[in-house]
Length: 295
Image 1 (spheres, rainbow, N blue to C red):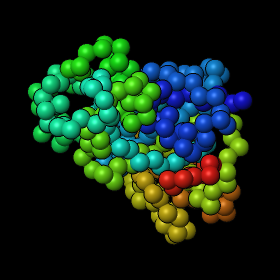
Image 2 (image 1 turned 180 degrees about the vertical axis):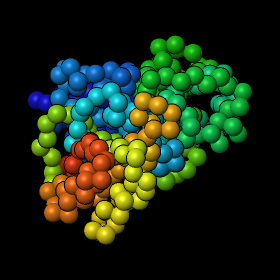
Image 3 (image 1 turned 60 degrees about the horizontal axis):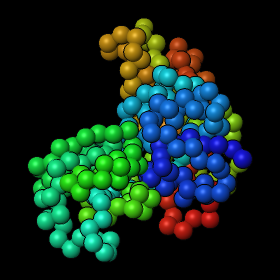
């Protein structure tokens, strides 16, 4: 059975992977830090890694994309989008899963643990109901929930998935506390080999383009190579090369397959003007459905 490393247990990454890949199709290996998730697949301890790389409201997860661009050479093999519902969890209080008075429960808290990206998605809730608490960032939301259980302190809480609350037997103080309800995160599956997944009609290719320094208007030329072929770009983002200040890659998501006629021709045109092109992956992409048959 193929192994997949991910942040977990009790994380949105794990929850999304189970939803799209199935709980039984792979062996999941939980890691507490994203660096360990990447290294696990680089060293061959696991076959794939699942990485959250973009959120609807926070944009790219900088640290994770930076690992993809600079630290590892693992192609993207699939991607999916999953809804994020953030919950405030603490030790149980009496019977039942919900505290009747959320405000009173929040006033008793002195500290909240969570991942930095999750905290950023709950700024309004934190500002209005928890302005008095200390916020501490941890490597994953599952780790936040685990700490609440381990500390056994009713004045600490975690911002985490409902699944983490079930796993660590925590009580939901407030559900769906993210600032925006249409909150989705994009996850990618990375690894050296193509996995056996359900076919998707939607294929995406991700590339890194480095422009030639002595070619004025090179970015316009790059975009023109896609435009006149009517190839849609779903994302273009500058990314530091880390060689010198002001020197950038362009990270581009393309809604086309390398098996098509037009995309390889566009990349050849770009390379002809002196650009360097690195393909990060050509892969199926899946949309969220509440009751999937599995990808």
